[in-house]
Length: 342
Ligand SMILES: Nc1ncnc2c1ncn2[C@@H]1O[C@H](COP(=O)(O)OP(=O)(O)OP(=O)(O)O)[C@@H](O)[C@H]1O
Ligand SMILES: [Mg+2]
Image (cartoon, rainbow, N blue to C red; front, side, top):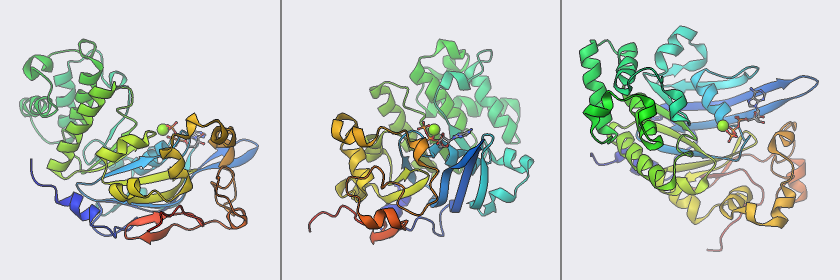
């Protein structure tokens, strides 16, 4: 595999949430879901984020924080009744919001791929896995069936499926969960997309298989300089897999940093809480008894996290904090960040 220049670019520090050189650039994105008789749920609020070629950006947050909404908004596939209230999604120089459905469809699968969990549900039970991968290649690349099948076999090799020639002719039910996930990865990579979103895709696998699949995914992404957004509820997984970590809370990025810095010195009280496995602490859990969905209809005049924060101060209930750069490339949305003594 090649050396990994993009990683060092991202780790050099100073990377802004959105900057030139990123293949995906999201500016001020806001998404809401109207709810009958109530305030709409503001699922994504004025969000800025970007990903460089070859970079793996981890997006971490609890259930209901807006991760899938963000992924779907990027792809132009927002679930009803969701709507984009403002902002821009620029992918590879194109304004995604201005594209027709047809143009978006051409981009999805070819330039942007999404890996989601439940690999078996993704696969057609009546078609061999080789033909399914080949079908994706043929749908997007102008190639013959023979060439597409050759490419499919090459992908099965790349994702390290044992005995790929035989597995080419296997049906999905003949594969283990880990192998089915590899097939889905092969399918998403077959057109050499520029950007991949993985939404909680590996969480159903057992820990060892998950580690193998992630290692493989990382090697493939690095080798092809693909940009990747890796969505997870498991903050631990990002430590070894991602170049930068973005923590999302109630639809906002509350912390964004190169992975090393993030784990050395998490500054947002929410990040600290996530890392401290708050779920095992009954005192903290008491503060968390309300589900997130009931908290995210606020008008943005306070810190969204104030209702749960153990460090809360009067200012936090009066003013909405901005994302501030507290050290190069390390952004925190908090008036009272957790700073380690020098
Ligand atoms: N189709 C929908 N209709 C109404 N509200 C929705 C819809 N989809 C999501 N929401 C709301 O938007 C917010 C963000 O949901 P989203 O699914 O993006 O969260 P998530 O971070 O992906 O959660 P999870 O980790 O459980 O997948 C939640 O409050 C959720 O209830
Ligand atoms: Mg989700």
